[in-house]
Amino acid sequence: MNPKNLFSVLVFSVILLFLSCEKTKPLESSKEKIKSPSIALFGTFHFATTSDYSSMDLDDFRSTKRQKEIRLLIEALKTYRPTKIMVEYPYRKEDKLNDDYKEYLNGIYTLSINEIDQLGFRLAKELGHQKLYCIDQKISLPFGPLSKYAEKYEKQKFETFLSSIKENDQEDSKRLKKSTLLEYFAYKNSNEEDLKNKNQYLKGTAQFVSDSTYIGVQFVSKWWERNFHIMANIDMQTQKDDRLLVIIGGAHRAVLKDFYEDREDVRYVEISDYLN
Image (cartoon, rainbow, N blue to C red; front, side, top):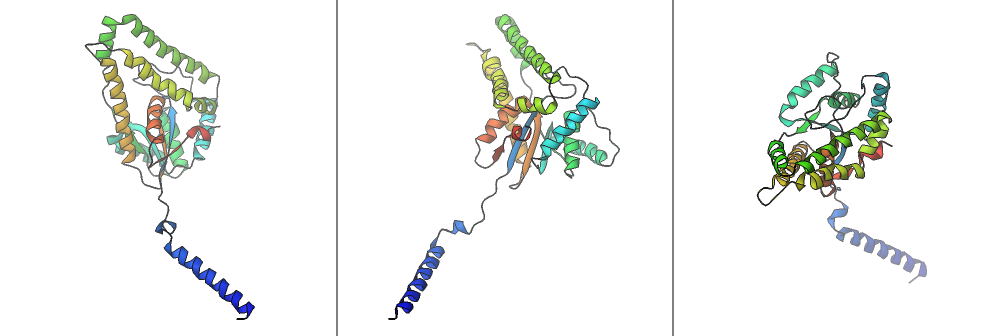
């Protein structure tokens, strides 16, 4: 056979072999990659009044200075490109919140100082979202029984524990006063702060137990249970191509972060990466 023809036959044979191998590859090469939703948790304090045991000492968030900082914070959050904004508002009262949001879109609702309005409403409007998603689930925490037990048997330790909570909020208030909101929230949405929030329960509240009662553990269990309910409310409103932004209290973020970082069906995104 002519060497030139032999070379052509060899080339043709190699091509056929390559094509036959391609056909026998697993079908996964022709499959679409399975999409997973993304979730980012923005931990915050409550801008307005709260029923929490201790809270921040805030300056005027309606001031020109703070409103400019809120504007910059919203711009930073926009870079994450969320497709849904979820807020710490009762899951079963979503219609009420979205009635207010529709009025805001129509220019007939005055924003309150609440973080849902200042961050959630303003961010959703700028992104062209037609609604917000509510995820909170109230569960009664046994603070009364915990306080009664601690006052009777471990009063000094309990008072020290409560004082540490107030001192932490005072330190946070000082940090906020000397920081911009972007600087403050970049710090508050950090591993260091998440650990501090969790240890308030795990090392703090959970220590109030005895042979006759596990009231401290019951309190902590209820807190984790509430966050499991919040996770379920998030999941029920999530589709596979969503980019979720959850605006929620920092103590919730610390627990929910553990849930979502460990899940294989959701991609956890660290919001602090967008705040620096």
